[in-house]
Image: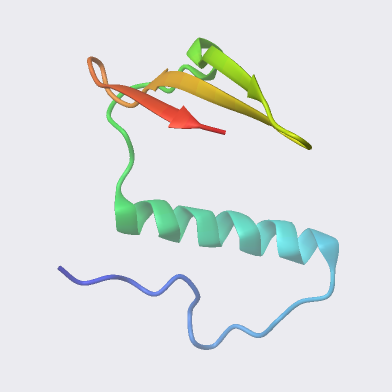
Length: 77
């Protein structure tokens, strides 16, 4: 497997916001071309908090979400 570069060699940095936004989209497209795109639509509204635990200066939440049509993931945040 060959990993494509995210930035073409000949490009230089930019200090203009509009140029950066364009460059950012190009980097994102190259990145997704490298790792592939999911073959199912993401449903961000289906992220569910299963439990929440109070710490001294934080709240730990256990989440459940879908990464495939029938693949469920549990994660801590």
